[in-house]
Amino acid sequence: MPMQDSVTVHIAAPADHVWGLVSDITNTGKFSPETFEAEWLGGATGPAVGVKFRGHVKRNGKGPIYWTTCTIVASDPGKDFAFTIGEGAKAMNTWRYQFAPSGDGTDVTESFQLADKWPLRLYWALLGWSRGRTNRNGMQTTLERLKAVAEEPEASA
Image 1 (tube, rainbow, N blue to C red):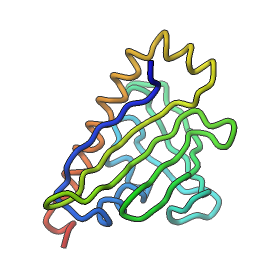
Image 2 (tube, rainbow, N blue to C red):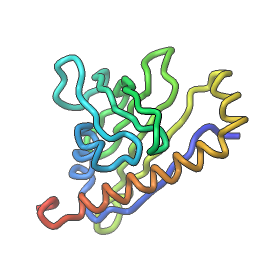
Image 3 (tube, one colour):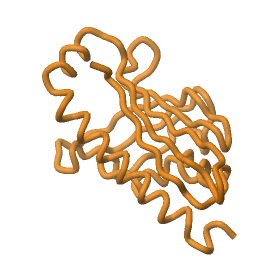
Image 4 (tube, helix red, strand yellow):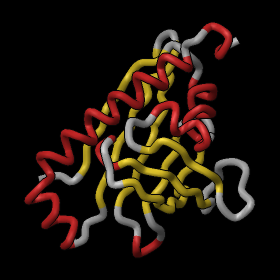
């Protein structure tokens, strides 16, 4: 059973604009149903590979509430933005946003992929059906909220 999933939504805005909204992690609380705020760490003020930030998470939108440290692993303006939960060998999950020009705007794909570690394989075998559904619904919500902001007339001007 794959420990990953993705959702794609078309947004009528240029890829660079949408990428800028996503990669500025201080916007996370506007879009995510679980991570209600995020802040740069180590003096960072913007995205770059290796930069760390932390997100304030309300798991499943109900709790528990906790902070999680993330590391940016891809930062290609207008194309790709990804970060891991944890870093290096301790990374547990990779979240990715990919941007593909399409018609009047951009197809944005959000995805997650759990690390291939036995505790996560066991977790996914037992609870993956539930968490996978939660993640898929959360990605759909995130992208629909992103779409609403990105397509605001003043936002694309």
